[in-house]
Image 1: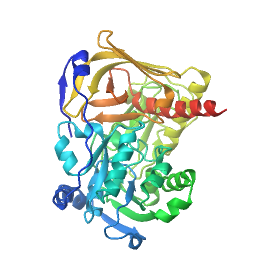
Image 2: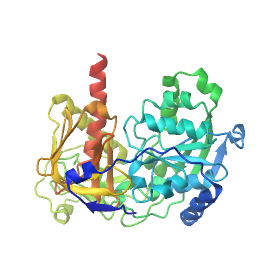
Image 3: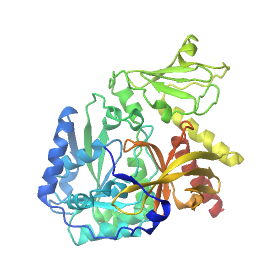
Image 4: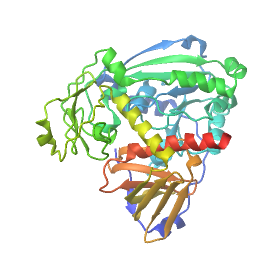
Length: 439
């Protein structure tokens, strides 16, 4: 999938009118059927099945909040199949509206900016359930999982449940991540996909519980490990490209500790610095190679004697998070990379405005560029996570920051794999800053 883009000067983009808010419009059965028809092929190819738990508690025409974990693009197609019998609105990132605003509104989408406080979104959700009598589909993780485990949930989610006062239903998928993990360049694998639809909370239960108690329930429900699921259920992924792009997520070598020198290609991932090499097996394990001849294949430059090795991808990614946290605590973390900058100010287009430099430290983000005309800062507490993506709309790996006036899509240039580390750093910096604020 691609997005409408154009080149324009920075001041010209700032002079453009920003989008005007519009209330959601009721979704018609005709458009739900269109969504379903567009989903049929992928659902058939994955032999999609589902089961329900407790849905008899939900009234036929009763609006509800549907929370769904976010693994890959097929998620929306699954939802189109499961929710076809009731009108529903989808909370959707604002860039999804670019060039197709009316179509997105007609199929029931409500725009929002990821990882930002958005009071307008809450008002739109309340309007949809109370006035339009429509359900709401929301992906509370906001971004695809990088490593097949849960991503942070917004702390405001419990308060949102109490404000909406409607039943909460959860859709949890299996196989969607294994079929199309974000790191793998949109290459689809032959994996069956299924889902469980569970009635989670009634309005009465929501009223009795505190926002924190509701958050705890949701946190437990949104705890998963899809590589572990693949291993335990013996799901075979035999495609010869299954490790392509794995270096985007596993960017740091556990043997020599070098960053940005990992290479995922075919079925293997290895370090071009020390030669340490792993195979990603058909059942989702990492298997280290003892044969040092693999160094010549990877173009290794030196060899060190580290002992740390991983068999489980989420463990490796968790270790990278710990390393980032240690850098932040020691005051040594710093990102400074050249970037190509795109801007989003309305739903007409994403505008390429020039080149610049993105800096990330314990003080937050600092983006400069466009011959000195752009100077934007974002503090650590502005967001609990980061809108970062691999191969965003087939343009490249991206880091997105911004505010209500404009969003800046920064594409790092010739600096290795830094997108995953920047997301980890943003999340850990938020937690550290929040902890200091309450001490």
